[in-house]
Image (tube, rainbow, N blue to C red):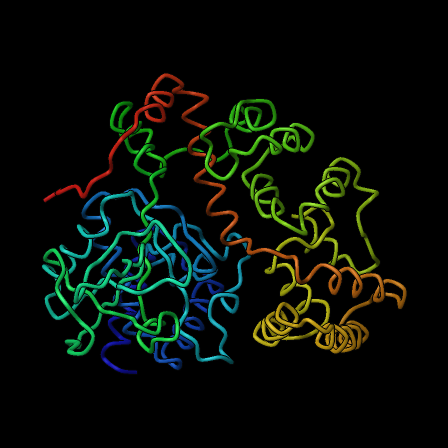
Length: 430
């Protein structure tokens, strides 16, 4: 093990202690497995860099979302405070974040309040001068409202969140614009450095929540809010969802009034399903929530337990992986390879191939009857392309819950924060 990886390991275990994470055999095995994959794939420096970015964000007291994309599937990310969801408690799967069978740099996105991206980079370079940071300029294929950057009398656009951070000093395709160093990615997403970018997104909603906290006190900081307030769930079922992150859609009010969410996981289910394809199955989920007998309940109870969270239907990509492993005997890594193939396949070739592999695995590893194997196989192959990430949906549903909490319990402050036309410039906090 290299000195750098020992450093990452120490940071992870320090983070686990800081979070008072119970160090059980399950946790130890999971951390060890994730770190071994990270080291084998050559991603150690990448995670150390992200840990330093998060350290800067925390020193600046920046409110962040609990996660974004697939990153919350990792317990290492949780320990490093990159995400704030315990992936083991939530039954999330590391292989959905990093596939041990594919050497592809994982996508870690960070949400921070609007106006602070440059501030984070400035302080990072002050604390760690060994890093060179470059904002990205490029020519988008379609018109955007991104910030215009001028170089050699040509207008380019600033990438809204992508930043290249490297210990190497770049000499080609770089230029200075308004005291910021830029890298010009002429080939856009095909540029060799583009895949190494760090994504720090600015989310205005977080600014407005922070304005509320500034007035009502840190004891009501989003990170300290209970996620089981029934008044908040009742609000989702019957209230005005205007200015509620991810749920500010008129048609969602009717759906939630019928679904009657009573947990953050219920909100995550509807959030995941409110997109093309899955949207058509919301009536099924509403029916299944209140009628257990309508759910798919085969002889092997493990199937029912895996599908219980989503009321007997396949909604999450992580559920696809659990069924493939527990019922059919595939590893999570093998199952995720199939997931990727199926989602890219336009001709149904991969779907047909997976059906055979899955059904044969069920015969060997489950107690399902043949008719149940066929029904489960059809359920998975019919829904697999439509599934969505639980990690992302849950993380973003929590942000919506925060807004709803303030709207229910601090309505005056909520309305004030969302009525002002605020210009979120770069704030100097140090």
